[in-house]
Image (tube, rainbow, N blue to C red; front, side):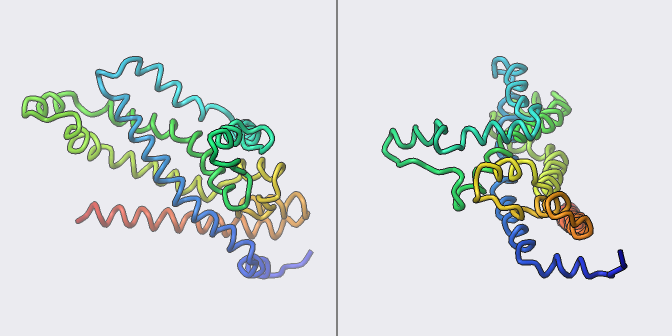
Length: 245
């Protein structure tokens, strides 16, 4: 062994696969974060309604996907995405829309996003539900006396007081997106559309355990950690500036 300075970092940054992996992560974030948090907010608001029956039961149902280990979720959806076994492909073919290959290079990123949305929407819903339960009931009573309906109640009382919880969930979503690993790893076993360098995390794993290059894997990991910290700092800075206005 010999000290090579920043040679490993230069090699990683110059590697087009590393840049392509971050490009996929960027597209994934645009798909995953708004849909996941939008669904979580909608479900939390609906389950917060006093007129909603079986609220406790539905909270458990929506949270259950998060309780399933990520590897198990990946295997479950890999079965559902398999062209020869997928009920979704057979259903689309039956209605005349043609058989959709969820593991094709053009669709597989959306298929991965679907797994993550299914798994984490309930988790974020629980965080938002806890924040909704902390809102004093007196505010709702005063709003109803003033003639405020359910929609105005959600827009002007609930959502504004959910902002701190929403900021936290967005921050968690950004960090989780940059750490995307389990789902691509599982799908890479059944399709060539997901390569060994599909995401930065998967690239680090491949270098460490397939190519036996722990030094390059360490450089990838450090760069990933730095970029995650920068993305989180930028997001929090934007939020703090808006709060100060």
